[in-house]
Amino acid sequence: MKIKNYEGKSVFLTGGSEGIGLALAQAFAKEGAHVVLFSRSEDKLKKAVAATEKVKKNTAQRIGSYKLDVTNEASVKKVLGDAVREYGVPDVFVNNAGRSLPNYFEQISSSQMEEIMRVNLYGIWYILSAILPQMKAKGGYVVNTSSMSGFMGVFGYADYTASKFAVIGLTEVLRSEYLKHNITFSVLCPSDIDTPGFKEENKHKPPETMAATGNAKLMRPEAVARACLKGMKKGKFVIIPGGTPKIGYFIKRHWPGLLMSMFDGDIKKAQKKMAKGI
Image 1 (spheres, rainbow, N blue to C red):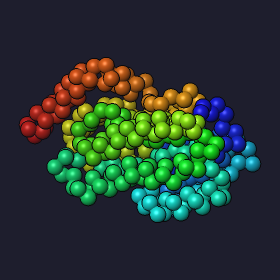
Image 2: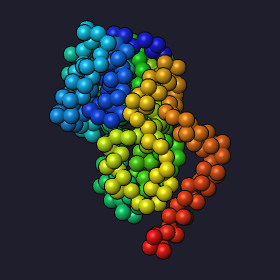
Image 3: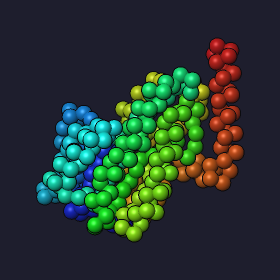
Image 4: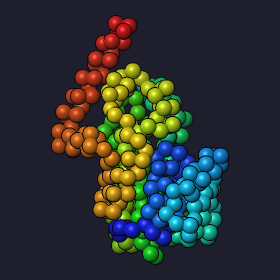
């Protein structure tokens, strides 16, 4: 199912209070969609709703929000049930809640790994387990946010990369299983984005991670949102915002050894500097 026109369509979006999620909410609202945001922070949700209200295309559009922790399966079922009763079954569901805390593998605790998996993977599983049975009757579109780390391992992101690889695999399976129900699936795979979450990540990155990724140009959330909607209108399975990340994806698919060699070179240079105390 391709959605060429979002006028009057309903969009549910997790992680919608800031960053990419807020940019997506505003992009859908500008095209005339009803938008319902889900996030753990009520204060941020109120600000996000107000910001989205300002850009909506017409006064008939409804912009709503619900406080939701996607890692709590019981809460997911209840809150989504409430949202569907108030706004109807969504035409589009965007799973955008996510978290990362980079570190060396041996310094990532099992509790951190489990938390990352709960947010990035289990959260999507809980959401889709609750909403897909309801979307089958009329069809729709699901976007699961993965990452460039969903198809290439990045130094310092062992738990995050594992979760994002899993998101792509899960989405591939669901794409096949729900094809007969006219539900289209995409994975959004952004690179480094200028968001509050990214600024927090930078406080924890090992030097080798900064060396391997630090020269990448940050994208604005609004550019990611535009690329996402453009990709959805074409029904693309993998949506990669930005020219440089697209090149990286192409190299990874066709010459994976070359990409690894490029990363390895940057990491070795960083480690030599660290050894010299530079």
